[in-house]
Length: 89
Image 1 (cartoon, rainbow, N blue to C red):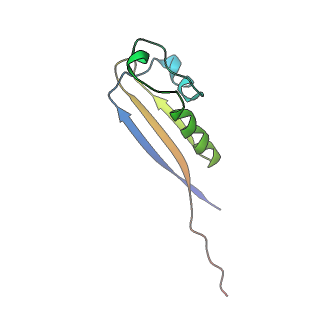
Image 2: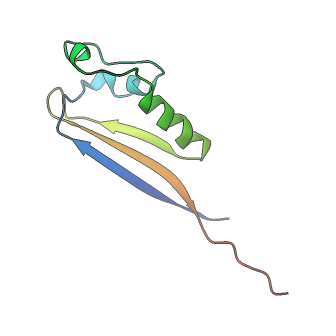
Image 3: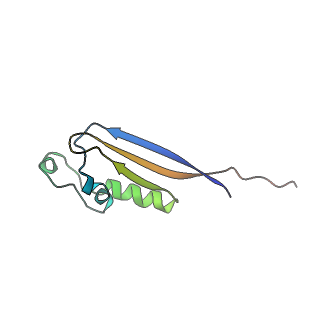
C-alpha cells in the first residue's frame, strides 16, 4: 500500500520557545520553565497526547520557534492511505 503524508501546521504569536526546549515540550507533564508558567494554566499533557496518537498512526509532530516571545509553529504529520482498489468479482 502506498502512503502520502498530510501535514497540519499551526502557528501562534505567543511566548515562543528557546531552542533547547523544542523537543522537551512533547514529554509527559513537561512545562517550559519561566515566569509565564504561573500565568498560563496547563498540565503539560496536550502535546504529549498529540505526539502519542500521531505515532500510533504512523505520523509525527515537530515544533519550531525563532526564540522567546517570537511565537511557535507546530506541525503534525500523518500518513494518508490510498483508497483500496477493489478486485473484479
